[in-house]
Length: 315
Image (cartoon, rainbow, N blue to C red; front, side, top):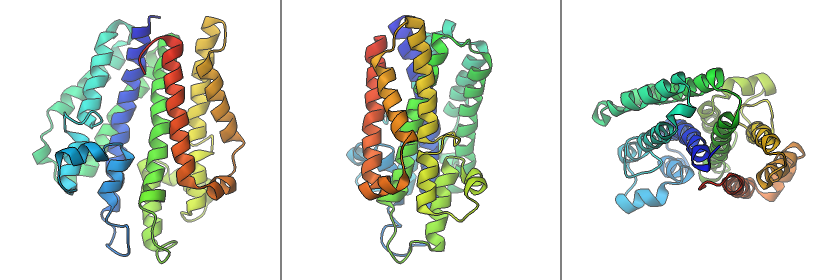
């Protein structure tokens, strides 16, 4: 497969996943902003969302203060923000159009119709009461595309590159969502374990569609230790680091088998997966969860760069 085709498939899936993830982050900011204003830190909700999305500096370059409506527009509709949902869907569609013959009809129609429908939405008609419903729609459309891919695409190089883009992006986003609560929104000692604290942890789990499965696994209230373990180390949780890197390893193994030798990106991914399988939350907390998350984001970016180097496309 040509490098430019591999790159388009990789980035098509990354940007579709990113559109969904920005919608999830926006939901975190929206729901946490509904909590009562008590203590220090609880009104940093939209700032923390911008930081987690990697958009904080870009936002401040265009706006003098953080206002909820401006943040929501910036994250969802602003064409000048390359990580807005609109920009992500447009970039994903452009990549898909460049490799149209490598996609199935169902994949193209799912993506193209999503882009067209999104373009028809008027931000002025999207009041705060309608925001959760709209964010749900974005997530549903991402799921439609992914279902179309899983149900119709040959398990060849194109499938592997699409999987890699999706799970590299998903791992990145889970780390960012977890960091929103645990670092930027870390509550005061007085609110740890309170109803406010529990509500915020539930919101984090809801943002990754995991609040019910968390209860099934832990059968306990929302505890920071368990939530972090669930999103980092549990291989059965579909958005955890461990789950994502299980799929990243499998896809890189598939590509390496086609080439006939293991590539550096596979060795790097295997190292991360092994560290996650051997990881323990007590060690992670002792070294600092925020520091662990930042280091993971760096290692995840390194894997992405190695994939680009190994298969000759821009990261």
